[in-house]
Length: 183
Image (cartoon, rainbow, N blue to C red; front, side, top):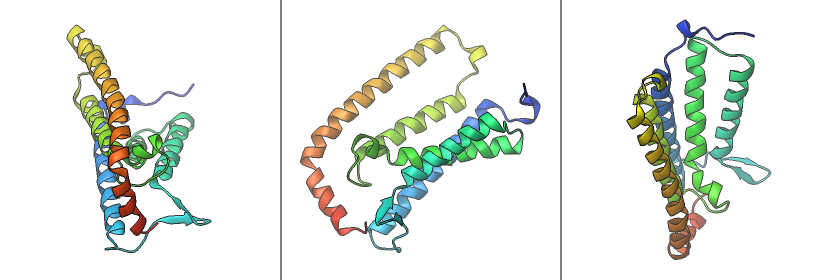
């Protein structure tokens, strides 16, 4: 079985920082482009296949699938491993930017769930980037991890409940805004 040469690969902390950076830059870039298109400041750059808008969520899924295959089949080292981390961060940014579409398959870019999910995912990457290695974990670290898992689970439960409530009150206004934007 092939072994990954750990000496030529960056540390987990370094990779987590690179993933976090690629993730946030991708999210910010995607949001800016979408806002500019919806404000009709730039031309409609969306990809259409047979009249159907292909959301960038799909690009992210394909990138994540490609990275997974690459890691399993090729096992890159050195700069290629770093490139894999960056592509992974881009794929995560594109996919989680449209997290609201996972919950509600209609609608568009204004779903609050996407913003909230990005905040939680970015925070998780930041924690991984700056956490001590598992070898240095002490009981208080594990206690913190358990508390964070519970807090994130509660966050997503409340997010869904809030999303359902605001969807009934704010959705008509948002749908009106989206109806005049390019499809």
